[in-house]
Amino acid sequence: MNPRPPLPPFDEETARQKVQAAEDAWNSRDPERVSLAYTEDTEWRNRTEFIHGRAQVVEFLRRKWRKELDYRLKKELWGFRNNRMAVRFEYEWHDDSGQWFRSYGNELWEFDELGYMKRRFASINDLPIKETDRKFRWERAA
Image (cartoon, rainbow, N blue to C red; front, top):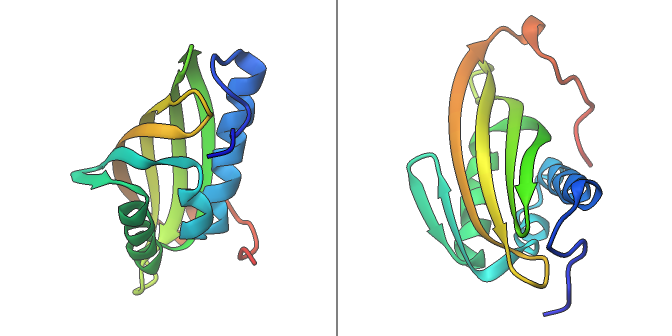
């Protein structure tokens, strides 16, 4: 695999670049694109689900974005050290009945020496909101 800069150990600038790249990829809602940031044998915990490997990441994200419509995400770096980061995020989406949600959470990330994420552990809570209370009013992604 080719290196995926920026590479660890991270400084504040490169950590922020990695977080922004993740935000941009996830907002594309393209499971294959997102999966390329992770090692082939990546390990995830997302809510109560345990995911192993890129193929499961792709399937998970396909299911996620079939349910979480018009998904828009914002990530924020909370801390970093060597090859690890703590990230806070919030995103908005609606279900097929039109109910909007804002989902809040924290992620712990661990990267390999080539800059691929090998571990992602996410804790997430959902808050039902009114459409008028949305923070993220971007146009639908292409």
